[in-house]
Length: 397
Image (cartoon, rainbow, N blue to C red):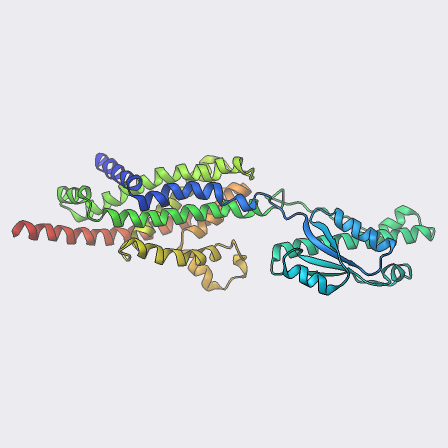
């Protein structure tokens, strides 16, 4: 039995590296994704966004406010312009991403104790850029106003410490847990890497069966076994062994080596990560075997799998929090192993979760493994029974 498993595993491994369509997905694609996918995110945080200024007041206060905004790491005052029409044209041409308007009599209103609004016209089609710049402008404007209020109280004879406490009775300190740089790469890359492993394994598993259905090795193996149940069990188990070995190596590259290569945080022990990812590999490969009984050509594989990629990406919660999705999307997400795998892997590797904290995802993956194994086994057994019946008819003829 062990010899049979190893022979099946070896045959599957040969098929992976000898078939162009499969090797392009399960080997070449893996390493292309590893090196090129993270590149756009390596700067982590959005910095020095080009912004224009319309300074209608041109006073000491307005110039100081603009200087402080330009000193903020998120903003770069790239242009001084005269009116909003020019700013609108510059934004449409993507030369700037917004414009700050300091109104007339800005300094006069402040000195009179009145409020004077500072307006920001931003390109909200890039929500990350808009949000970062708007937050930076609001922070600078709030600090600027607080300093003016403190200076005014001190000028009235109030003790500086009292004046500061009256304006700012408490200080807030923001601590970025699990993402020390508050960067996009630390947030998106670990989750996306699991999604990449899922997609390549799923497609590769389907393609392997499509290319192995009429292989001489499997036909000879079925004839020798002469038992549909044992043949189906051994074929599935041997192939799962191949995927397990191959994707454990890929997982180590994607979650250990990648974290050092791209300087991403990692808080878990490798043994914990590997024990969690085993049911993910099994359930994904078995889902591929189930789907392979529905599709019949290589083009069918990509026509079916590629459109579902957007659905999977959405229900994983990468683009929008899962908590804000309707219950139907949660049910859809429960079908795909990628969803609990991403949630659990991020908990383990980026957050240092204990078993109690990721056990729901761990058992979810094992349940999917059992369900998909039963379905794949029954479908494989049925195909083998048909093949054996065909052999018997040939022998009679």
